[in-house]
Length: 281
Ligand code: BTN
Image 1 (cartoon, rainbow, N blue to C red):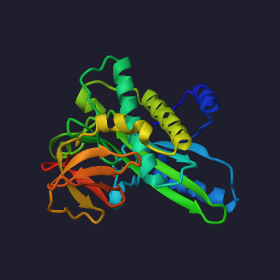
Image 2: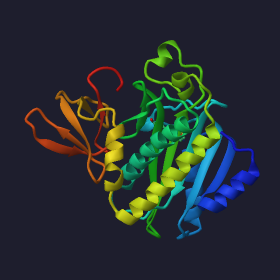
Image 3: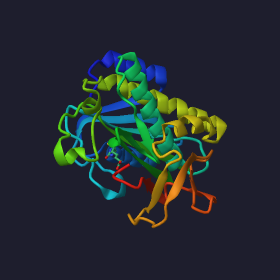
């Protein structure tokens, strides 16, 4: 996605303090952000950074676990938010959860202001957004640390299938787009600005509060697995045999899961992801 109205971009940049870097084609917005971080590190940067890299088409979009992320031209939002947040604990998982909630809020916001009533986005912990049990958005958060300065550069890559009309047959089993589920074309620009602003506000609040407590209830309300049976999938893709009940996130963003014996324990997104008993969700 490209925003051609340069006056709007300039006004937005000065209002938010976020610099926008737009490209027609990139291999991956996360890769571009990483290259930029390398430049910053080689210059010995110690200033806070707040920039977004966005493009119309990615030729090598990356998903989690080394998967490929389809990023065709003209229909989606492919963006990476680069920031240097001052948080001490597991910054990757915290920013990922904030981004997921930000995307859901932005979709809901736009749906309400455009009277689109039939859309109900949900979060599949930790970082997928689903509608009608199919994925419309994925988030890939990466961290680059500069040992010389101690700076932590966080790159939060967000990919959203907005107006893609190609989800038919096989492709439609697990993935979908906002257009496909709502029947209307969405304004990508508005959605992009809403997400960027929401994430920035969330990150500021996280820096002040040092805990995810302020989004916990909202996040859990959007959680598709809330109080439902789930199975756990480890990073290497194995499923554990046992069935648990998801009880939502705690103040640190870990998912609380209840075993058959009634004991509750915490799982972090670095260790596992979750799946329902049937299908993708
Ligand atoms: C996933 O669900 O596997 C994560 C997908 C993340 C895709 C986005 S698109 C923008 C950014 N650039 C990338 O190469 N990947 C992320």
